[in-house]
Amino acid sequence: MLDWSDGPDQDFSEAINLQKISYAEIISALKKEPRSCVEPKDLFIQDCFDWFFYYLNRIEHSIRTGYIDFIDVNSVFFPYVDKFRANIDEFGFFVSYRKYALVKPFLARYSEKWPSRMLKQIFPFTTTTENKR
Image 1 (cartoon, rainbow, N blue to C red):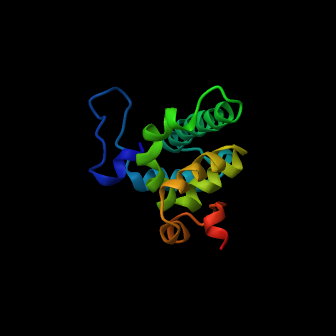
Image 2 (image 1 turned 90 degrees about the vertical axis):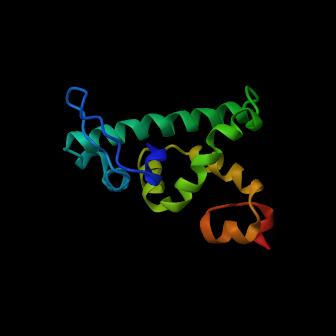
Image 3 (image 1 turned 45 degrees about the horizontal axis):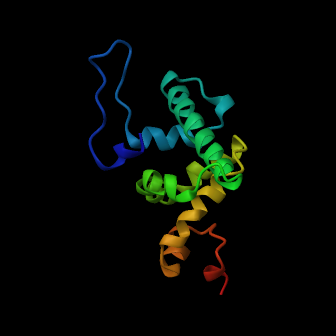
């Protein structure tokens, strides 16, 4: 779903009970408290992102315990980091609401790949030494 922001709405109308979902609808659904979502489309979006952030949370845990290294997953999630940064309030609200405490540290790992001047603009919650100067 994160890939959809750069192109047209996805059309799933040929499948039974499927609808188009725009990137704006994704962002809108993530702004809502999960318990207040009643529309099927919003529930679907929140469910997808709930699982996605659950897995990011587990990946960070696996890195911390030494089961995997960050380099094993770095390239997979790198394209999505910009999307998270562009809508940090919406994604941050959802992650915080669901209490996925390890998502933020996982995304902060990507700060090492960015010049500090860019980080200050697009990733304000970075905690690298370089940004504390």
